[in-house]
Image 1 (cartoon, rainbow, N blue to C red):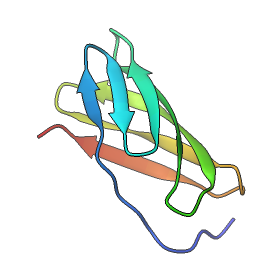
Image 2 (cartoon, helix red, strand yellow):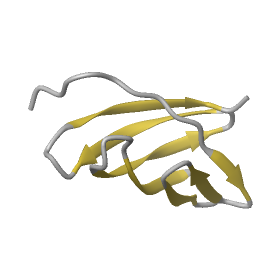
Image 3 (spheres, rainbow, N blue to C red):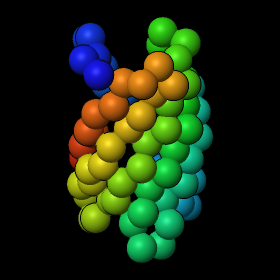
Length: 75
């Protein structure tokens, strides 16, 4: 599916739990990442991937069928 636009966000990770503006998730001890949230446009999405040290990457899927990749950097 051709997804329009792009987005960015901020995650707060504390004790393996993730919080962001519109959702929650967790990072397991081995770095596996899973999150559920709602985009600014109201569409639900899930993201999975892996954090390793101060960086991470993975994929996301929106309820409208849009899919893509994400990357993260701990600051």
